[in-house]
Amino acid sequence: MKPRFLPILSLACLVPSPPAMGQAPSCPKELRWQDATYAQRTTKINNKVIRASAERFTNLQVAEIVWNDERTALISMDSPAGADPIALTFGASRPVPDTFGEIATVLEPPMAELSFRRMQRPCDVADGSRIEFDAHDLPAEIRDALARKSSFHGVLQRRGLEFVYAWTVDAYAAGEASSWQGTLRYGRATTAFDLSTDVQGWHVYRAGAFVKTIAVGAPMPLSAVLKEMRDRLR
Image (tube, rainbow, N blue to C red; front, side, top):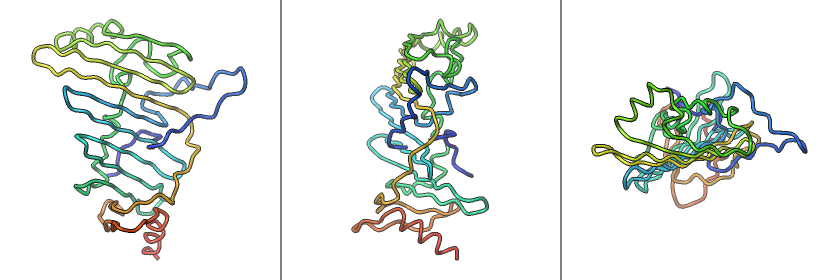
């Protein structure tokens, strides 16, 4: 199964091209919260911390999750039609690419999961605004269902096509307190991932099947790994 990603996903920041002087950044009305170019979220549940990020470059996709101080990461190539997809993963347990299939759910902001009336889509939020929200922003049926479990409050800020949010859930007797902090950016991917990046210690997969683990001890650029995979197909 092909990993499920946000439609546009990196570990580095992708900044949308600035608008012309005096012109507000374009924000298509059909844009969804799930359509972020760059997404990052830190989730705290009691004493546990999960950090996740994902981004699309012009030539590939990158995702990373850090949970209990254990880092797993994925580099997924854009393959021509009909070609076997190539992916590299990083992690002590040699994760398979499908491990990252649900990263979108780890990165989704609360605005995507719940029907907040004032911010159902990114373009509902005015540029430069700061919105404080809580259960009163939800439809009555959702608000009543959540009220039996916990209460929450949050804040969302927009600057251009960047959105920063914080969300805190106050647990009741049987629940778990949690908080989310995240950043979302929208726009075309305009930066290529550096193929000279050292990938020693990463695991190589083709069409979902394990090929090998890159030996540790000498730098190995990603470009060399991709060339080797292409040469194997000749």
